[in-house]
Length: 290
Image (cartoon, rainbow, N blue to C red; front, side, top):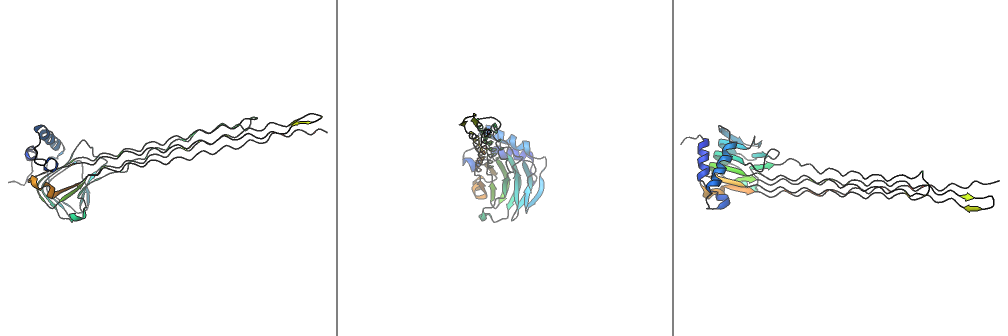
């Protein structure tokens, strides 16, 4: 048999093999087989790579690897770029001869999704300052406005499905399709400062007596309440591995899937309360009469 993998052969393999890893001995429905066949053919390049030896990290270009022979050496990792994957589209690995020459007992994956950092939520806006009333008689300062809540963190993306089609496989392929973690929520806004208090009433006296002394200055306004931190983003779900091998009974022996959900994002920190306004000055002393 020719070593060449044709798109026609791949299509035929898909339509007759079983999903041993997902459904045991249950055969796929015709609708599922046709859908999977179209999905695979839509992403495969026209011609396969003759041989690919992976000794370090190698980022998968696009969403498919189509090769006659692939060898994973110790430390070799095929990285799926999480910034470009779409959960609704599969990543396809169509390989005639697959060899894993690594120590899989350590649990190191040979295929992994590498997620970029997700943006944290936006910071909350500072509260409005209270009105200053230092130039007005007998009026307390206005309270500062509350800080605004921080924005929510971005949700993590769901990991894609990986379809592995292998004519022969030596060793065990470990695939890590964990979902992306959610982003941290934004910090709350600082409370607005309180306004300054007004000055006290001036003293009053007549030619015969002192009617009243100078009044105390009015209190400054309270600082605004701190804004609450934003909610953390939701975690992305783990992906699935669909292994289609020449011997479906060896799926569990030759493949291992790690597919935890990502971690939910942490909530943002609360903002700081606003500073209270300064008190008003004491009222003016009465003029002394001669």
